[in-house]
Amino acid sequence: MQDRLESLASKAREEIGRAQDASGLEALRVRYLGKKGELSAVLGGMGKLAPDERRRVGEIANRVKAEVEGLLGEAQRRIARAALEAELQAPPIDVTLPGRMRRPGRRHVVSRTMEEITRTFQRLGFDVVQSPEVELDLYNFESLNFPADHPARDMQDTFYVHGDYLQHDPGAIVLRTHTSPGQIRTMLARKPPIRVVVPGKVYRADSDATHTPMFHQIEGLLVDRKVTMAELKGTLDAFVRAYFGADRRTRFRPSFFPFTEPSGELDVSCGACAGQGCRLCKQTGWLEILGCGMVHQNVFQAVGYPEGSVTGFAFGMGIERVAMLRYGLDDLRSLFENDVRLLEQF
Image 1: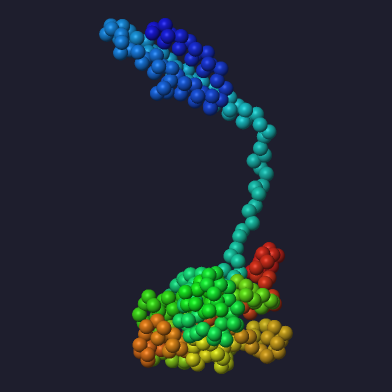
Image 2: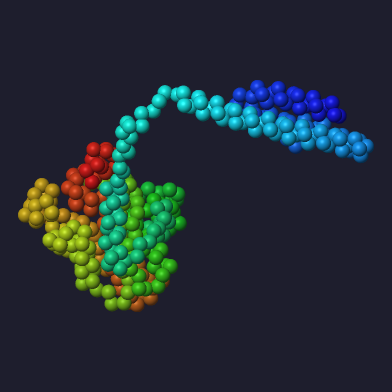
């Protein structure tokens, strides 16, 4: 056994001395000093030796182990020095050369517009809530006073994920056509007073210069006792002045939405011509910005609020449309083409 230990030490000196890289050196360490290495294999028979001989073999084994560990450490330092010398001999780096400038990024105009609108309503006391983009027909239509076969459903030309849309199954799954389902979910989860805005993506089968199959909306809801149309008009007028500028004027026109009664459209005075009339506003001096109205009592009944117990108002606007009005864009689709020349302007 003593001869085997001496032979092991001799072989280790030779192989460790030839090691050229860290991976090869690690393999040698495992081979000689690992739990299943050659040294352990030799010492496995020590239990059969006499006590005196076992002591001598143990001393030799400790010396061999210490020698191998020393050889490994020396070889490791040698390999590290060689790697450093090779690195220093590489082509020199001119540290005086200017660095490569990284172009600063910026928020996409749609994301920035949504955040600005959201912050404006937060300052007016509204909370921000999120809701699923893949919705139930029950929340997207039925609870919002869109009964089966209501003609207003056709206007939204919906993307159905599951279920027969011709049967208007309340359990059908649909890509939401507006963020109003978030208002239903909020009323089901909270008791009045409620003051929330719901931003996010919505989907409709439509595509032209002012419509895309996917776009962004932000809708608002305020529910309490004795809420009036005057509060709706005051809230939206305050938003327009805060977002577009104190000099902008507003006007309300009657309209129709299934989930509000009475319903209206809000126009804002054209910023390009100061309300005098131009190509952007089609010579009217006004730009349509959002729809609004007093929440229909059928909607309150759908979420379990007793009839006549509360009133409220709701409104909704397209984020891309607001961006178009604010920045003077003439084609909504340009916001999704990722043309850096356009996006860098904002």
